[in-house]
Amino acid sequence: DIKMTQSPSSMYASLGERVTITCKASQDIKSYLSWYQQKPWKSPKTLIYYATSLADGVPSRFSGSGSGQDYSLTISSLESDDTATYYCLQHGESPLTFGAGTKLELK
Amino acid sequence: DVQLQESGPGLVKPSQSLSLTCTVTGYSITSDYAWNWIRQFPGNKLEWMGYISYSGSTSYNPSLKSRISITRDTSKNQFFLQLNSVTTEDTATYYCARYRYGSSYFDYWGQGTTLTVSS
Image 1 (cartoon, each protein chain N blue to C red):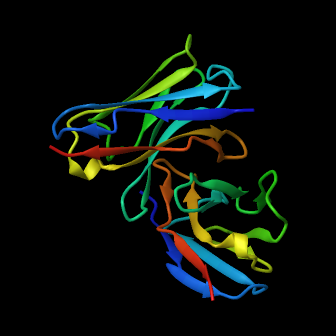
Image 2 (image 1 turned 30 degrees about the vertical axis):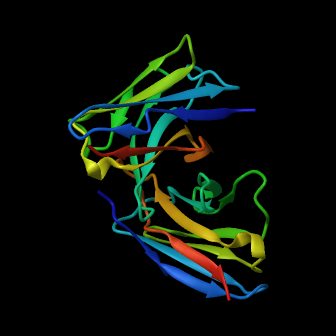
């Protein structure tokens, strides 16, 4: 199975701050990487697919980058509504595997 | 609008089988996409379990392969998860989700159903 190493596991950031979360795959996943936001007691919501494409309705302050084994999710200017846990997911090879999550809280 | 809704027993005894239903509205499960089960353990780890495609083919996570079955009832636009020989480690929130081929992501999720395995 492809292992997804996500970091950091948790972080605090201030309103307006630029935030970056990273995921490293144990092998090349050819950009088959998506990012999800999950708020408490809610199901995950798609933010980014195919590493860099913004899902419908997602604010433009979210962006994705990366290729090969290394990927990142960036929030350009943190808003209070962005406090959540974020997960990466690789689709490059079955079984699909998730990162362990990054819990983002306001400082 | 596409909606997915999980339903299940809530509580299952160890060694029994669990059966969950995902009812899809707003889109036919035989038209396109892969229809998946994903679970989230206490502590929030997510695990992809498997899918049934619009054509009826299935794919499972090898970690579950001997215990899992995903089937469907096209007349009711539902798909099902059966997991045999459950243990307390199967306690989780179970989600159904639609997977978009090509773009390769889960675009619709259900709200999740919590399953506890306990005697």
